[in-house]
Image (cartoon, rainbow, N blue to C red):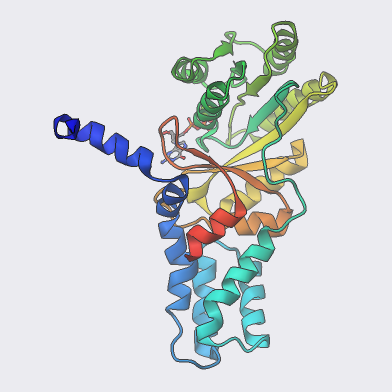
Length: 316
Ligand SMILES: Nc1nc2c(ncn2[C@@H]2O[C@H](COP(=O)(O)OP(=O)(O)OP(=O)(O)O)[C@@H](O)[C@H]2O)c(=O)[nH]1
Ligand SMILES: [Mg+2]
């Protein structure tokens, strides 16, 4: 009965909390759904086999949706070979996209409450690493875990400060040290976590495009330290990709995977972008599972990737 007294912002907050996480996902993916599904289905007409001209359009549209040339050509060839009709196109795409996501890799982020869980977060400049760490820390903290953030980006001025702000927002501890060597910081972080019973450690890293060799060498050093101290801990090496950059992500994934064996992908900035097709491209080409998606700039704007929900959000 007191609804009348609620101000607009309270109302908005309540409404957004009422939105199911699927509703949020559907909203976030609406542009990708348009570019990857609707525009393609709408590019054909009549209840006839998709013709040559339409196939050309479909190929262009799939490439534009950041599926990558190889995958786009493969799908178009299948439509042609299987003599798919316009009316069957949507179901055909749904099955194709579902099959691509069916890699045999674990879909969920590794986590075991009774173990130390280490998340090493890598990616190029501005991909959204630090923001993702803030969101992830908050999620783990809310689920009752003892979380330590590690300010492993000791390169960029103000990077540690930025992580510090996120640690306060999430209400978790942070290990930071001016001008520290990031590998030795990771070393001390894992020791500290064991000594003080943290069960989640999230390590930030620098994202330098302009100095790729040094960046990659530094990441390898950090990873080696983590592996040496791993014991029976869980480890996820998470590559953060800016979803709005589309196909660039594939090249980044190749380089980072070669250097530090990526175990999961986090795609950020999917909100408002139409390039979510990159998820299929990465699954197909690298067999790397996307496990997290960033859906905005606020602390709760993170979802665990679920392939059925993802497909349903695109197609339903
Ligand atoms: N819209 C949107 N913006 C995001 C998302 N994730 C991160 N950002 C924004 O992207 C920008 C860069 O994010 P950071 O977290 O600082 O990126 P980073 O990878 O740590 O960058 P460096 O430390 O410079 O390598 C910030 O302005 C974030 O607010 C997301 O999911 N959606
Ligand atoms: Mg950062």
